[in-house]
Image (cartoon, rainbow, N blue to C red; front, side):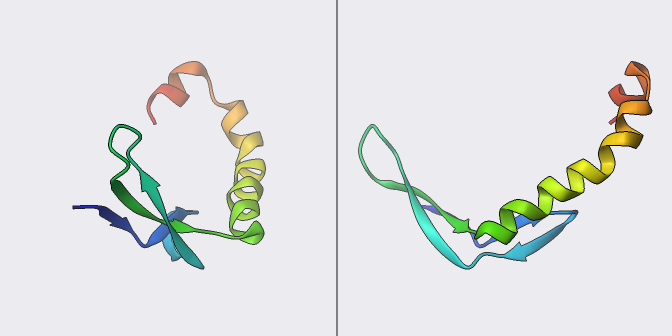
Length: 68
């Protein structure tokens, strides 16, 4: 039975996808999962959030980052 992922985890919350696509098992071509598909804006959202977090994250020491 295929797992269904109907959303995308972006910015700490689940957002709906615009569509779904099948992920096929290469050994037997069965559908292993149905995965939420996004658009360009969905791809840019986590990139912008990562860029916004970069300065604070890079200021943490190695030990501070390891706590995450």
